[in-house]
Image (cartoon, rainbow, N blue to C red; front, top):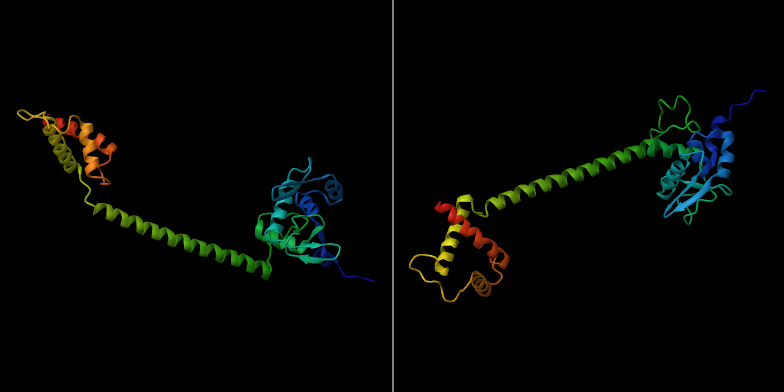
Length: 250
């Protein structure tokens, strides 16, 4: 009597432990998976859990990727002993957690679309894969989220450009002196300094200021918290003013 081919149903209900799925993802032959899983070393670093095997270099990466999927609630797991679906990993422990093949396949199509391991995809599916409605909806949602994020970034960029333009206009309207105006101001400062210090012919020095330091201290005392009249700025501007007027005389 001819019986129906049950492979589709077998694939639908196939279930793997996390290290089994990770080993098969790495291309380990099915007949060697049991031995590799037995020999594999379980490791936990901070919030990450994975398996390692000296002869299967990618086992750490594939098991870590599967764990991240469980941690992020994008890959459902099940406790094989009672087949109760869990949407979250339990207490951070992966022992006893299993994954249905169909869930693993859907998850991989979304998270790793370029990966087509042989234990999940046949030869035809490696080239073209007709995704189901559920997978398509998830991909569509990701596309919508990305478009929304792009829209937000574009709007933010436009606002920053407008703000930058406004700041440029504000700076231009502050009346900041040009080169000629700055030279004029420096020369005025220098002329007053020479007058106060008695450096001009027929002019005696001002008796209240025996040095530039005394003059600066008097200015700070009489004009506190005035923009541009800080000690450091005055000590810088006085020599600059004298150099400016000297250059103007040349």
